[in-house]
Image (cartoon, rainbow, N blue to C red; front, side):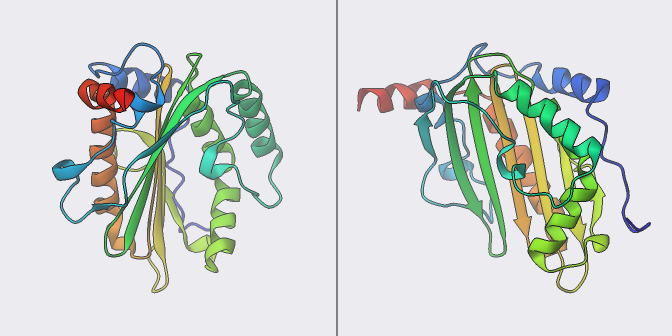
Length: 237
């Protein structure tokens, strides 16, 4: 790719493990997996939603016990003609993910006038570092992801600048500051059996800080753990 792009996505090796350990400390998440009722309470709702953002509908959850976590969610699409390194990273990740049994998952969508963020959280039976597996894939498949994004948007992939986001969670930030550009932000973090993912989009590249700030708040709410009162009321219903 061209010199316009900065390869500053941190390698998901020792540094990612260290970041995970630091981020996970001090949170109030359960030591084991959460069920669908608990997961549905870990989102920003009501007055907690940051100013300028709106929650679309309400968080939705479902029991996924017994299902297989067999892909990388929003990154599990076609990546054109992937390099050998990309293929190897995806294969290694898929093999490990296939052994991690699902328990439950939940999603919520938030929007501004021109931006959108989809937050997805889920729990697995086993303690699996989904975040590091995904970070490995992001690192190995960076060029393919950028090229695919260019094809899907009709923009020149060489015009996307790639970096690490300024968020507490690890991920990938892609910015095209052209007249018809935009921004895509992915953040993934694992906490043992519980996992946080967020994908933010905007047609305006100036929304980077808005997306980063929102995702930080969404992750902070997730780390506070389930609202026991709300989950108990849902179970009674």
